[in-house]
Amino acid sequence: MTTDWQFVICDALEKVYPDADPRPRADDVGLSVTLGEPASFQLAYRPPFDGSLRDPRPLHLDVVGDSADLVEVRRVDLVPCELPAFPGHDDGYDRDAPGLYPDVLVPLNGGELWPLFGSWRAVWLDLLVDDDSRTGIHTITIVVSDDEGRERFREDVVVRVLGVRLPELDIVNSHWLHVDAVADHYRVPVFSEAHWELLERFVESAAGMGVNSLLAPVWTPPLDTGIGHYRTPVQLVDVEETSAGEYRFGFGKLARWLELCRRNGVKGVEVAHLFTQWGAEFTPAIYARRDGETVRLFGWEVSATDPRYRRFLEQLLPALVNVLDDEVEPGKVVFHVSDEPHGRVQLENYLAAKSVVTDLLEGRRIVDALSDFAYYSSGAVPVPVVATDAIEPFLADRPDELWAYYCVSQERDVANRFFALPSARNRVLGHQLFAFGIDGFLHWGFNFYYSWHSLRLVDPFRDTTAGGAFPGGDPFVVYPGEDGHPLPSIRYRVFAQAMADHRAMQALRDRDGIEAVLELIDPDGGLRFDRFSVDPVHYLRVREAINARLVEG
Image 1 (tube, rainbow, N blue to C red):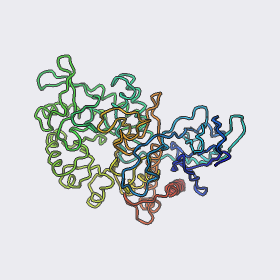
Image 2 (cartoon, helix red, strand yellow):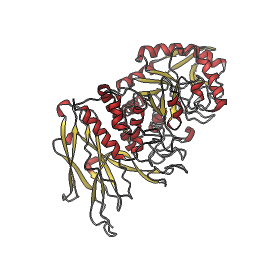
Image 3 (cartoon, rainbow, N blue to C red):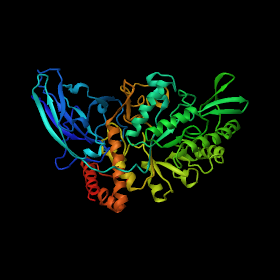
Image 4 (cartoon, rainbow, N blue to C red):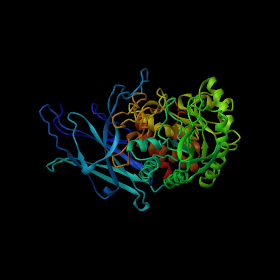
C-alpha cells in the first residue's frame, strides 16, 4: 500500500510498466545532445492508494524556467498486447504475458496527469534546440501540483546542448510506409487531397526517426498479401491501354510523391517489388484504364514469366527510369525483384522472374531481403538485405554492399523493437550497424494497420499484433492520431536515438578515425549482432563519451 504520491525521473531507455517500480535515472550519467537532436527523459508517477483513497482528480505538470518553451511533454499511454513474445523466446524480454504495455506517446493536453490507482504511469519529455544561439546548459524544472494548487513534486533536469550539428546519416534507413493503410484507416479516397495531406504528415514523421528512403508504390506493392487477395490499389503511375498490349503512362502522381519525399528530407527511393513475395511466382496487381473503365491487368492469376507482363515492362520500365533519373539524386534509387525468397525451389523461381527484367534494369541497383546465403553466392541478389540472425556468413564473405533487416522472425538473441523487449535492444542497433559497416537497414512495418496477409483492417490502438500473427511492436511504430498526425511511440523515439548515435559515431570517425569510435562502443571487441550489452546505462554512457570527444576540438 502507498500512502503518498511517488515520483521518479527515468531515462529514455526505461519502460514504465504499471506493476513494476521504474529504474531511476543514473545520477552519474549526464544528458547532452547536439543541435537538432531531442534530449529525452521521463517522469514516472504513482498515486497513493491505501484501499480507501479513490480520488480521480488529476495532478498538473508544469515545465518552468527559461527553457520551458523548448520542451514538449507527452503522456506514455498503455496499449493492449495479446502476443508479446513467441514461445521459446530468449531470456532478454521484459515479460511475455499478454497485457498492457507502455508505448504510444500522446500530447499532454493541459498538463494533466491522470492517476491509475495503485499503478505507475509516465510522461515523456523532449527538449529540442535547433538555434545556434541557444546552445549551452538548459535547466528544465518540472513542477507537479495537485488540484488545489499544492506542490507535490519539483525537480531540475540539466541538459547540455552542444554547439555541434551531426552529419546526415550515411547509410540507408528504409521503412516501408503503407500508403493504403493511411487511406483505409482514415477512410479517404486514395490520392485525394485529404490523402495527400495525410501522407505528408506520415512522411514527415518517418523522416523524424531518421528514415531517408521510402518504398514508392509505383504499383501497389505485392507485400504481405494473401494469395488471391488484393490490397487497396495505391498505384502512382497512371496506365492507359491504348490497344491490345500497348500502353501510355502518366507520371504526375509519382512526381508529386517524389517531391513530397524531397520536401521532408527523404532522398532515397525504393521502387515497389516487381514480383510477388516469398517466391516471385506471380505479378503484382497493376491497373489500367481500358475503354473508359479501370481494369486489373496483372495479379495473382498471371505468372511472373508471362510474356504479357514482359511486354508491359518493356514499355513501362524505360519510361519510369527516365523519370527517376530526372527526379532523384544519382545512386538513390533501388529496385526490388521479390521480398524474402528462400530455399532451392524459390531460388529457381526468383532467377526466372529476375531474367524477365535483367536487361531492362541493366546498371541499376537490385536490392532484396533474404536470409539464405545461396541467393548472394549464386549471384542472384547482388545487394542482399540480410536478417540480423542470419548475417554472420555474409560478414565472413562480404558483399560490396550489405544491408540488414529484422522483423517478426528475429525474436531470439538479436536487436528488435517489440513491446516486450527492453529499449536497450532497440538502441543497440546503431552501434551494430556502425561497427560492422552495414550500408543500410530496412524494416517492413512503419504503419501496417492490417491483420496477417492484409486480410482485414485493424484498429492499431486495440490490435497491436496484426490479428495475433506478430509480436506487438512489429507491424507499426507510429499510431494514426485522430487529427491525422501520426503519434510516435517509445520505440520510434529510441530508434531515432539509435540513428543519432550512428551519426555521432560518423562525426567522430571522420575526425579521429574509426578506431577512436570502436574503442568507445566496443572496447573488448565482443560486439556482434547476437551478442551485446543489455545494460541500458551502457548506451547512455557511450553516447556521453562520444559527445565529450566531439566538443574537445
